Image (cartoon, one colour):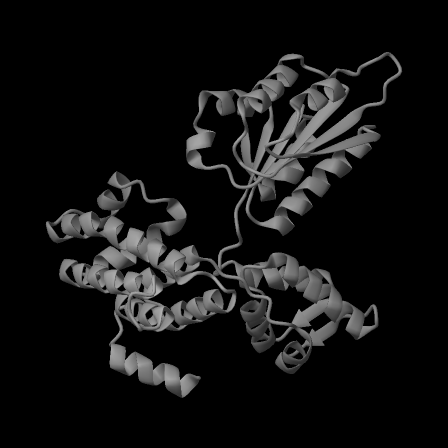
Length: 350
C-alpha cells in the first residue's frame, strides 16, 4: 500500500508489515520516516538490526542469508537496505519477492531509496511488492507549504518567529530541510534557555547561514508561473552552486518543446484542463503549466527556441556571449516580462 509521510504514524499503529519502503528525494523526511519505523520495531521486540548499503556491487546472497538465519532462539531482526539507486537489478527484485513469499514474522525489512519514478511504480513486480508491504512516498515540501511547515517546527522548538523573520529564514533554507533543522537547533542553543523565545529578522541575518538549494525544475516552474523575481533568484543560486549552464538550458528547451503542442491545442479552442489531462501533466505541475499555456503564444516559443540555440553555442564556447546572462534574458521573456524594464529592475535591486 502506498501512503504519504503524514499517514505513516497511523499506519504503523494499525498492523506490522514485513517490508517498509521509503522513497523520495528529501533526506530529512526520509530520515525521520525511517526513525519512526525503527522505533516501532524496537517497541515490538525487534532488538537486532543489520544495515546494508546496496550499490551495483552488492551481493544479494548476504541479504538472503540474513533473512534465512532463523532458529528457535533467534532474536527478531530489522534489516535495512539503503539503495543508492532507485533501480534494482534482477537479483534484488527476486530476493525481495522471495522474502515476502516466505511470510516471516521474525524479520522486518526497511528499504530507503531515491524517488521511484512512475514507470517503476507501475511495473508488475513492484505492484506485487506494494500489495504486501507499506510504501512511503516522500514528497518535497512545496514553496507555498514551507511557511507553515517551518513555523510548526520552530514552535515545537519553543521559538516564535515574527513574520519578517520567518520569510527571511525561508529564503535562506529553501530546498534544504536538513539545513533548516540545523539552524533551528542552533537558534535554540544560542537562546540558552528553556523558555519560549521570539525570533526577529535581525537575529536570522546574524545567525542563519544561506543554505538554500535549488534545482532546474524549480527554475522552470517559476518561469512558467511568470514569477520573475523568484526565477532570477533560483538562476543565480544554480550559477553559484556551479551547475553547468547547458544542463539548465536543456531543462528549459525540453519544457518549451513540450509546451508547443499544448499551446497549439489551446489556440484551437480546446479547454486547458482537457489539454493538461491529455498530456498527463503531473498534479503538482498543473498550476505552472496551466499558467504558461494560457499566457504564452506560439510565435514567442519559436523565438525562445531560436534563442536557446544561440545559448547552446555560447555554452559550448562557439560564441563570446556569457551563457548565464543569455539564460537570464531568455527566462525574462519566458516569464512574460519586458526585457529592458526587467533588466533595469534587477540592477536597481542588486
